[in-house]
Amino acid sequence: MSGGWRHWQRQTVWTVPGAPWEVDLIVGNCLLVPAEALRKDGLMNSRRYPNFGDAEFTPRMRRRGWRLLIDPRSRVFCQPNAIPARVVRMGFREKVNALLFDLKHIHNLRRRFYAYWDGAPSHFQGTLAFGIFLARVALRKNYETEQGEGYTERPLAEMFASRVVK
Image 1 (cartoon, rainbow, N blue to C red):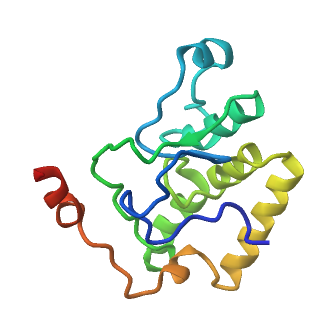
Image 2 (cartoon, rainbow, N blue to C red):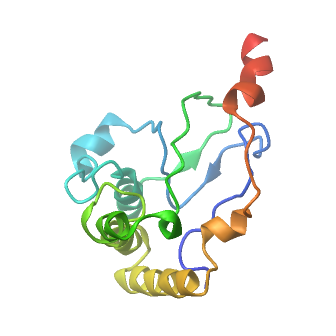
């Protein structure tokens, strides 16, 4: 009933469980994929998902029998994604472009539908999750309000500097 994936909030690499765990979907800047999986099942679908191919790729791998694991012993430090402007703060033209036309935009509804459609265990569940997502947006129960208006994360430099130096 949450309308799709539920993310851990305010989680860092230092607060996750100590042992690897299995997940249904992995999106991120660093994926380790066996060469056999790529030869057998192909690459990310960048035509349908420009810049967001991992949203389709890892669920497809899982449906084809590959296990998706998060190993907390792995550490990759990278620049986090820039936080996009909220839709309510965009001008009309920018809003229409982001929601309907620009598939590379994080708020694009078609891209989001494809992610639910291809990322869910079944197409029916993906369609249902997208409908719930739209209802939650209409009721203002979306991710932005769950974080809280005043929520800000400490910069990576502050969070990890002492660990990197050690």
